[in-house]
Image 1: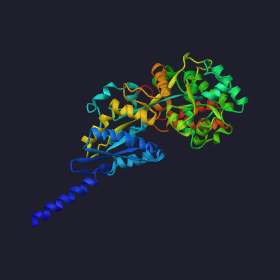
Image 2: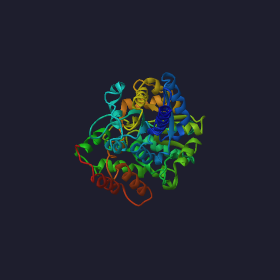
Image 3: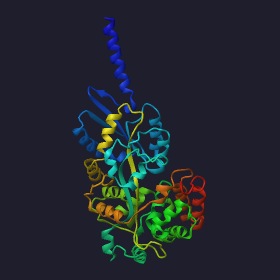
Image 4: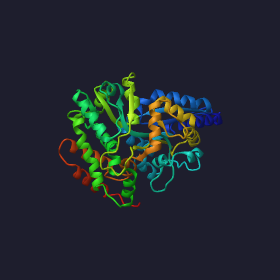
Length: 424
């Protein structure tokens, strides 16, 4: 009797311990439940469909998708991974956003554990690597490109073609403004300052010198106070008359609505905005163009800036690492990549995946031919103050008349010098 009671108590304890495993994963017979955390609350239905495909080929694994608000996710994830209630697999930020988790030892290095990673684009893998140890901590899931979306009907109605030169673009903006149409849907309100470096990259990457200037920055040969970079900031001030009125008060939902409803003709943004714009107005005819190099640009061909959006990594404290590795290995396959691209209208990072959406396919082609890093995001988020954050705040001040382009560049250089060491 006593032996049976002890055996029963041990069984109950084992179940309780399993329930307390990281991510809340429970073993149901031979079946394991994995917790997958994300910052994409809008993607629940898509991920349920995607993960159902994984479960068909992995019947002993069930995956629970748990999204959190994007603005709170970094803190929630760091807390979760530091204790026993974190996820088994987590959606990870890229570049500098990944480093605190790497340095805290919260993630499993995937080198030698996910063979398919050897075939991924080296530029995209950089976003999933430890900055100091060079190890890979996640399977990249997507990349983003930057360009101008445009309303085909408004262009046609006003006799405008996608611009071949910078002067063509300015002339088109003037014609649209005269017709009562906002030329460029840009937001600089309190919730939207993070988009300002993106807008700058779209219009200014070629003007500051693109990849060659970025390489010179990293080596210490040039600085953000260089005249070419200052000139690229000046472009935003020059374009301000074609932005929405009182741009510093405009919010992200406002600009998306402006473009989706045909009140704005062009939307300088990332490939990530195509899906929400079309969701708001499925009948909208959208095209995209690379911005022609502005006068004085060291680069003479249009550039498509881009970056790795993030990756999926394994919690070093997970009680189900073997199963978690099975999931991330599957996330490196074309099957996952094609589902991701189709269900979410995003550019998959998995090699060989071709977007079914023709506009996304065009963006992918432009990036493959003329891609350049989004410099502030890729290289200057590894310390504090964050270069991207300094820049967006200063640009907002410039747009409301509180500072000038030269001062913006000086503030950016002063900020990153506090931690950035050229050549490291």
